[in-house]
Length: 194
Image (cartoon, rainbow, N blue to C red; front, side, top):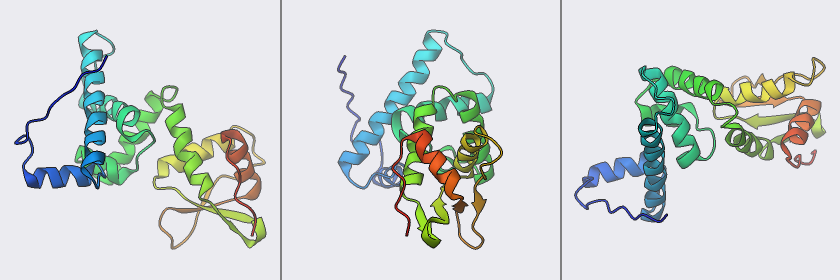
């Protein structure tokens, strides 16, 4: 069903439009329109659930988890980092991390593809170090590192979890066998050794 929604030109002030574009990472009017479409669909999902009596949350934390879930499905299409969630939900980075963690725990099965899409991007951008003796990845969120560690841990103790790179923000070392395992599990072509 095709429905067109017209937003009145005075709905956002010029300053609000600029702020909304920044929050939604939209550089052009077309990107802004697509982002707003995702937000509208996420809100409609939330109202649909309420109208049809499908798990309506009562506590504010539960409401935020449901909102983030719908935004991941409709707007982000992957797992956002703490800074982005914090700016949209007006939360500190610590509270944003807890919100992401709790949302992933609550909706793990429904968000599996978005989790995997995000990890695939991280693995595909890995750097091979010391001729493939280790790899370095940049994970924008500790939550995603925990997700990769969860995949590694499910395959036994012989695989090493990711370790933080000292002095680099969001950088982690990955042992070669753990990197290969992650790539195999998620269907990523490993970066060539250098």
